[in-house]
Length: 249
Image 1: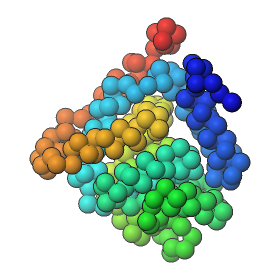
Image 2: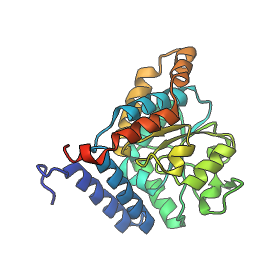
Image 3: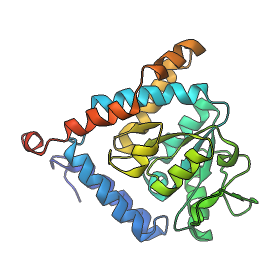
Image 4: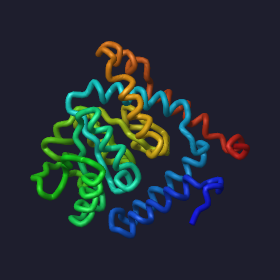
């Protein structure tokens, strides 16, 4: 049991969720490693949402609202941590939800589909019942894409993504939004909008901004995107990762 007064209570509770998902078969071993890596970067940014992340979230909300066929890609870690948030965001955007896994097994796909359905999803793409297509340029199981989802999407939200697939999706003409605590990762560097934040904070904020911006006119949303510079925003985030200063937080 973790006491609420513990200085890292929230972080430890997330760790418990990840371990529970692993024991249930939702996560592969690599999912635990990925979470630990992200946890380290979260510690470096003070375990709170920084201003560059807010700017990226606002731009991401505008982009998703402008999209014709937005798709939210879900892996094991995302399903374990924010299933209800993903479902609510999809509902607000009329977006599709698609399962995509590196360590793909029929059992894991079924478990993640069940989690999303329990969270309120009406339809989940990327299951083994579909005749999935394959994206060119990638040989891993993550090459799969639903014909009604990622394969034909114009904008894809790929939280906790791997660099290879993010690059392939970009080469396929998709506009990529990612949530990745490592601003130096290949995914963050390749994405059009990189949200450097913990997914459990980023998704609720993304929902908040979608609700705030959904009545904006098209030209107003486009202006938000024009004013956003992903490269500069990542540089601003890197400047915040100051080990000496973080020791005082």
